[in-house]
Image 1 (cartoon, rainbow, N blue to C red):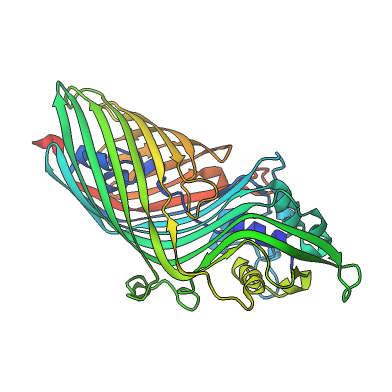
Image 2: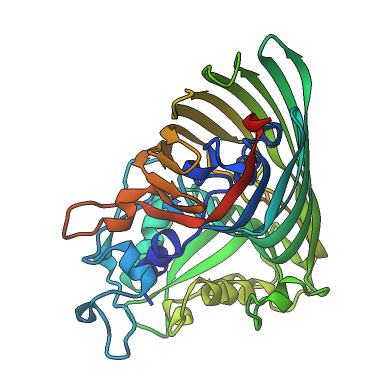
Length: 474
C-alpha cells in the first residue's frame, strides 16, 4: 500500500471546517447567531429584533505539507465529478502519488480537517441593549499537529520503497486528534456601560456537548531500528523498542451512521460542557454615523469526557513490535491503518483507563470592525490557538483575516483575505435575502495541475438565515 495515497486523502481530500470561520457570514453585521461563535457579546448588537438560522454548513481542509496538483479539481473530487479517464474500472478515482507535491521548508507540519453544521438557532433582542440566543451546532474534526517534515516524507514514500530507513530516530513526534460532537448553546449578552454613543457589551455562551467519536495519539517519541526481513528478500522490518505516547479511542461510530437517532442516542460515549466569553466596545453616535467595534473573546473553553480505551506507553513490553510493509496490504483508509498499528501495540494488554478527555478548540479572538451607514465595511479578525501542540485536544488554527464587505438589508458581499498555516488565501461570499453562499479559499475549489494552481485545501459554505424586524425602526 502506498502511504502517499493515505497522506493525499488525509491532508487534501478529506474535508472539514475551521472552528469559527465562514468569514463572509460570521463578520457580517447581518450575521445574527453566526457572529456569536466569534464573540458572544455581539448578540447585544444584533441588527434585528429576531434572527432565525435555518442551517449553515461548511466544508474545509487545509495543511502546510502538501499541495494538490491532480489533473482534476478538489471540488470535482468532493462532488464525484472526476472525468472517467481518471477512474479505475470499478469507478473509483485513481489517485496517483504525483497528484500532491511536498512543501519542503523544514518546518513542522499541520493539517486540519473540519466539518460543521450550524443548525436551527434563534436570537431575540429583549431590549436595545441586551439579547439572548439558543444555538445548535454539529462538528467533526480531524487534525495532525507538530509532525516533522522528515517523518512525513518517509511515510509518504511508502514502506515498500525502503522509506523505513528514512524515518528519523530523534525527530518523530506528532499529535493526531479527532472529535465528532454536537452542542446546544445558550447565550446572553448585555450592555455594561453606555454614554455618548459608546457602549461596552459583555456576553457569554454556556454549551452542553454530546460526543460521538474521538481518537487521539500523542506521540512524544519512539526508539527503533531497521533490520533486514528474513522472510522477504530486499525488504526491511521496522522494529520499535520504545514508545513514549498516549493512545485513546472510542468505537461508538464503527458500525453506525450519523442519523438523527445516532445524534440523539443516550448511549453516545461523550459528555461535556463548554463556555464562550466576550467583550465588545462600540462607538456610534447615531444610526446615520459610522460604527466602530473592537472585540475580545475566549471561545470553546472546556472539554468532552469520553467512555473509551486509553493506553499509556513508556516502553514496549516483552518483544519489540515489528512492522512490515505487508502488514498494510489491502488496507483502505487511515482508520484501518490506525487499527493495525493499535492492535500490534495493544496485544495482550488491558487499557490503562476506560475514559479520557478531549479538549475543545479553545481560542483567543480579537476583532476590529468598521461599518459605514451606506453599507461599506471592513473587518480584521485574529484567532490565536491557546492549546499546546501536544495537548489531547482539537485546535482552532491560528489565523489573521481582513474582510472588506458591503452590507445592506437585502444583499451582502464580502471578500476575505486570510493568512493561515503560513500561506495566503482569498475568498468571496454573497447573501441575497436569506440565502448565503461563500468560500474562504476560492482558488482551492478550482485549482489543479492543468491550470497551474496548486492549492493546499478547499473551503465552501452556504445556508439559509434571516432577521425579522429592524432594531433601528423603533
